[in-house]
Image (cartoon, rainbow over the protein chains, first blue to last red):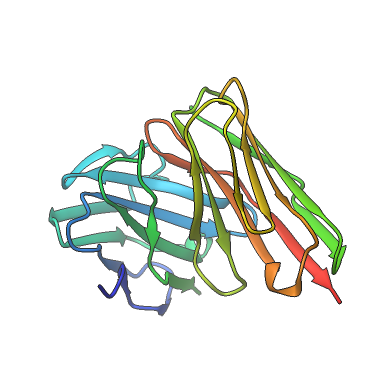
Length: 115
Length: 108
């Protein structure tokens, strides 16, 4: 298996533009997580899906952020409009089962820079 | 909400010295997981602890889960330069919540 695949690996955009990050989880995994990593705040959980349904989105910063999982093999995280403070590395992770009993596999991350 | 605190934030050691990082949760956890992130990389799973008081070893790494299932530690014996990176604990409650990590640097 190729692991969790994220695209793009790097994104540089201007403030106010829409940004879409993409994730393909490991086949057969039914839990998917989006995390944001910064030096100041560490690894923050943004949203957690189980069987394509959002279970916990309390970490989504504000209405500018939205996440979807239309099917078991694809998820997107969208920021509209983007702001400089959104600059961070965004990780997608997937796991087999629930967080209660299995490890999470992380993608390589998307480094987002908003100028 | 669920919070996971980790100390210290940074630790520098000489090669051969021991290293310990500590993790505390504000709530009782169903399990705790440990991950390692190399500079420029992504978090990679190391181990999961489930039982109260559980101790697991991986070569020079020793992981412990507290009796109350609210704290955990990772101890590395005789560090090597390959141990460099950031070590995260992650508490499993309703979601997988990460501590801020301990960044370990090792000088030879």
